[in-house]
Length: 302
Image 1 (spheres, helix red, strand yellow):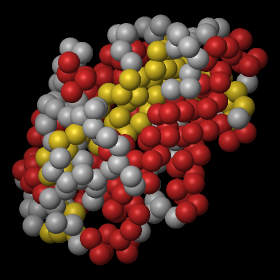
Image 2 (image 1 turned 180 degrees about the horizontal axis):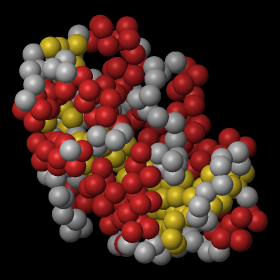
Image 3 (image 1 turned 135 degrees about the horizontal axis):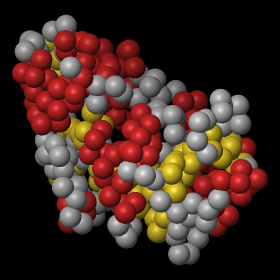
Image 4 (image 1 turned 60 degrees about the vertical axis):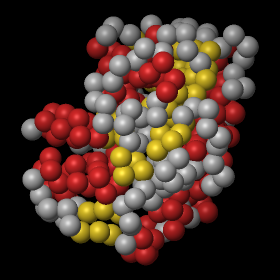
């Protein structure tokens, strides 16, 4: 299979590219015009300008599928109005360019990024792919992001990956938290009652490959089958590292440090998500809950 990949330098996309290459697929990376020359085939593009280099596309040849994971990092910095605009435009512009280029690329499958932020913060409610969207900033962004992908040409299969909290020691939230937990400074965030829906990086990549390989379309929650509260996750981390986890970071302190938008919209959002459609399709998880995820990723880092 020949797979186009946007956001190719990102945490998830880097692991996905390695997995696809290891099994014999050819990865064609979408790169910015100013990016260093890659070792493999690539297509230059600039989503902000609505540009994809058609000469590159002709040179690389037809693609079977495109996986679109482009977008500025959600939790990288506080959500100023400028930052929120970048979070939106970096996703919507990239998706618009890819959708508009699918016929020229020859691709008949689009696996498009999304997030469980689609559901908003919903307390203890159990959320699957049939649940309604939320109404906050991140939920509206995800709704618009998925709608942009659904404008793909007739005959193109579109699947949306509503990704949860991807755990791995080399990137994402866990990589930022791990040093504190190892020093015994890890603790719950806020009251700790908010639900988390994690997934290992390994299962995230395996699920995307599964969607590439099977004739599946529509939204899929990419989370482990079992969610847990932030307080329980903190306990899991402490047990795995044999460190105390008695500290707590009040919401007020988080808001001062990171801004209320990011804190309420992401860090303290309660999302109890289940991967119903993925399980129904026959996919099996290697790590079914946070304990097994943390145990496996910490073991891999030793």
